[in-house]
Structure formats: C-alpha cells, structure tokens
Length: 332
Image 1 (cartoon, one colour):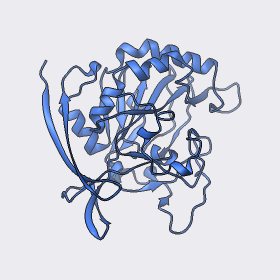
Image 2 (cartoon, helix red, strand yellow):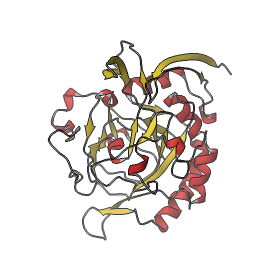
Image 3 (cartoon, helix red, strand yellow):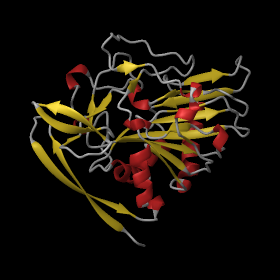
Image 4 (cartoon, helix red, strand yellow):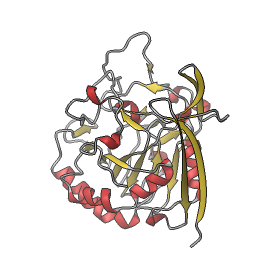
C-alpha cells in the first residue's frame, strides 16, 4: 500500500492579529474505505469545491438503510414531506438532526471513515460533526431541488487567514492597516451518500468552483423555491441566487452516475441543485455535515436550519465550534 506524505505549510493570523504558523501532513492511499484518498481527489475537492468518491461507504449501505427506515417511520419535528399533487401522490421526504436517537446514524458518525475522509479533504487538524440529513423520493416523485448553497442556511462562518500568496483561492483583505489574503475555501464539507442507484440525469448538479465566488446567497425554501425571510438592508452581503438555468452555458455543471456507497463530497459554499426528474426505483440518501479548524459560530438575518444552537447563541458569535462540543461533538 503506497502512501504519499505531502507537507502543507500555511502562515495565518489569529483572532488577535498575531502571526501563527502551521505545518500539516496529508496522507493519501488507495484504501479509501479506510479513510484515505488519492492526491487527485483531494486536489479536485479544493479546486472544484466538489468531488465524487467511489465506493467509500459500500460497507455502510445496510446500516444507513436501516437508519433511514427508522427515520421515515418515526420522523422528527423537523421533517418535511412534499407531494407531487395530493397526499395520495408520490412524495419527497427530508428530515435532519436525528443522529443522537437513531443508533445507526450515531454509529456512522463515530465509526465510519467519514471523519477521516473529511479531515483529509478539509486539510484540518480536527473534525467536528454538525448534523445528518435524510432525503428520500418515492418512485415517480419529480420534486426539483432549487439552486442554493448550504452554508447560508447555517450559523457558521470560517475565520482562516494567511499572509500573501498569489492564488485565486484568496481574497485581498485589510487587517490592522496591513494587507493579507483571506482563504475563500472554509474548512467544512458535506457528504451526499446514496444507498440507491442515481442516474446522472437525475443527480444533483454542482457548479464547478462556485465555492470561490466569495458570495453569500439567500437560502431558498424547498417547498416554494422562494427566498427565506430575513432582516436584510441595502448594504447586506447576501444576494439572490444566480439563475443558473437561464444561462447554463456560462457554468460548468458537474454530476455523476452513482452506485450505493458512492459519495459526493462538497464544500458548503458550492452551489448545487436539481431539475425535475424521476427516479424509477425511488431515492434514499444520507447527507452528513462536518466542520474543520476554522469554523466559528455566526449569526444570520433569518432563522437558521437546523435550529440547533447553544443556550445563548448571540453571546457565542465568533466562538470556535470546537469550544461548543455539546452542539458540535469533536470526532477527531
């Protein structure tokens, strides 16, 4: 088994403006199911904001399937079921934040290779878990997924900063009258794991490198495709989602044929969505969200989803997620 050890150096600025240096080693191997990755996969995730990983969770398909069954049979207060027409028609179901009560999901969080994969892809020393999200579609359900990026739904920002390095991953910023470059790729990741086959024409589509746009888009409601309500003003950093479908030739859209146990790994700022489509055999997916070293609690001008926050969320703004293990358990 060949392993490449690649040192990655970064010079950063802490919250107090002091320079810090870090040296991290990324390990790559073909044993993906053990939590290791090929160098090309890590690079594709960093550059494109999304990568397809083949067979990394094949051994977990039966366990995930059992957990999804429990979730569908006993949904939480956060669940949502959207029908094609009336309640007798095929439906789309989603629910989240049940990993503490569904044994199979809890086991996946702590024992699967997901945290190790996230650690390598995020290039992070530590990994915290945020939440899981179940998506199912009945055979014949054609519900679309509106274009969106996930992080705007969440009370999370990144704070990683580095001194000048000329690369399009970085944005020139001023701090204490000194110029430095801010890393656009925040240390977070989502794994979208189907346990049923997904054909490319029905798969989620991801806008290549959209995590580098340095934009915040207002979240969309899946039921109505309308923006979230929020206290926005003229100077708000949030804007309406770009109409990808109106000008698809302007974007490079990525999607894949997927088998059970495959996984799409993507940055929470990567724009994605799906048009109306039908999975003849239905669809069952577990998505999981993971956080790295630079993630901090932040406020949003709307009700966040999931609404799982510390007791005094405003008082926690700017705190590292690793200082709030009761909300964001540290896995690695």
